[in-house]
Image (cartoon, rainbow over all chains, first blue to last red):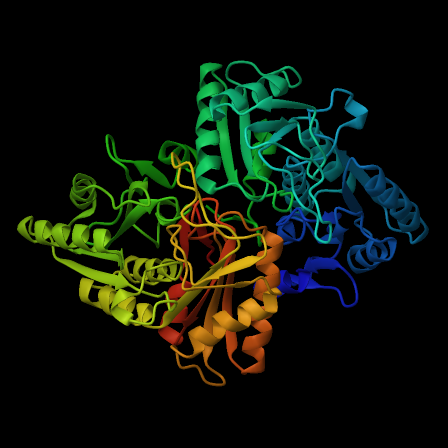
Length: 317
Length: 317
């Protein structure tokens, strides 16, 4: 899969030999902060699809739904590490966190300044420290990547990524589970007429099961979870992401999005930018997640900053 | 769905009031040839996703898998038609062809010069006149859109679109049928361990059914169909499209693509550009199609010409 990705976008991304590390094809400017992310496979286009100018410097892929190898993180560090420093964008899972903690120690012994940002945007889980990093992670990549490309320092890039991270909330639903390659059965069973609320991106069951209902109802439920966690007032500006989980027709994503926009309008919340499509998937799961990202002027500038990666092209306007 | 699409990309596309016609938000230059396409819904991001600068001027959407209404074609003609003329890009289906033939007559009575290009890229069907227009249609949109944006005349735009059209071949397979909204059952049944070869984009059954086999085998079969129809020699250059049918994980599309690239390399055919993702879908069908587009220097320039549509951003390099 990684070989296919780099061959499809050879001008943008390359595979470091004998690793599962995807890096930018074009050499980066010396001294620029490197932004590195990674995690299990099965979430395509994340994470390799977000490697490119103005976005990530490297993405490290584990096996399906498994943390990357420590050797691969070291290879990425050696390739990208420089006196400007490295920001690791880490989704809040035990395996990923252990891995990047070890890498942070190692980087320190290599003399590379390193900071971490831990993304935990999934409001399906009430306890904040246990929240998973899901689709909203792509906005942390974008903000950190833009800040680094602008030439900001490691501390500045970290602070901006942190400001993005605390302003992002996501929640997802599924109509079907996903099936991990090699497993004979999906991780959970769901009847034809049932919906799973609050699913993660690794095929895990959600927090609640309900009878299937029209999409308007599903969108309302998800947004009410998000609103209770992310205070939003009239005239606040948000970026909206409706993310397909892998097997959801694009038609259905746009219908869900249309309902999100109507509900935000009824609260007089302004939509600054919208993203509808597949950004952080879960293999062949049918379903979608909604992410709201509350933005201020500086975050808007960073979001709109030009970038060129396989899964995100932000043209110079 | 269309309301969601235009609200997600308000800078790029708008809906003509009381129609299912999506047009560019920015006014086009006077005198430029207008490129108009359309067809049934259920193929998202086609066709509205390809409306934008350097691509289509308008996309007319019918109901799911149904030709658009004549009134909507007239609305598109009135909005886009001008002395520069109009090129209709038509997929080879009876309903669509009748519709655009009627529209061509009407345009003539309105004094708008009009040409048609009929796309029939699906090699699953042996008889050329009966071939369907499938995923390769997006390249005809791109070539015609770029030629029109460059300021070429209607005859020139038509000739270039024709040259693209005769150089494109596609074929698809499916692991599942699709289900049309409101229908209780899919259009055909397929066992867990079966593959349908030569499917169309409207849920119709294919030309042959086989036991499931590794992707390498499927890619080989599809390419052998294409090679027997599109003469390709060593050093020829092609553009590759691996198109997801709606429910296929992106991971699987890149694995299929990797196999396509290896087989082309073994024949010393050069890959000029690659596209992997969802471009012309069939609702919730799981499967993919492969398109090869043989290109020369002029077609390469047109393919790389800048464009900005929801589903295709070609940045100024």
